[in-house]
Length: 99
Image (cartoon, rainbow, N blue to C red; front, top):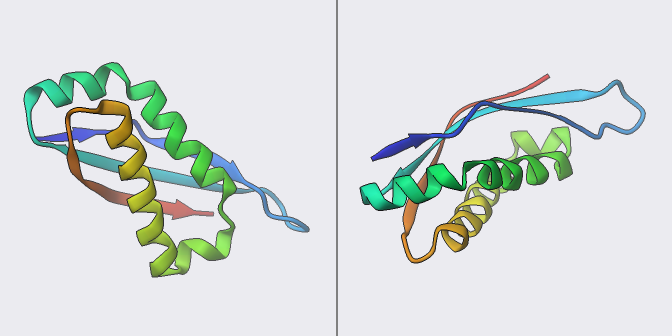
């Protein structure tokens, strides 16, 4: 079962340049309906977790495959802690725009 995260738009720090914004669309794959209900109830916290991490990134990091893989793994681990005992295996980035 795929659960859509709300679109996330945030600004990131770009020293010496104009502000840079990031827009992200993502889905989380949940194994059971109970997990989807639990995550839906905790959705504001899940969005906050992702936004905080995005704000800490630099523009150049969005072009680094290793960094993006780390972003996915970190967010997934924190979401799993949040919805424990339910587990999710996948966080799917549908779109990431850095402008």
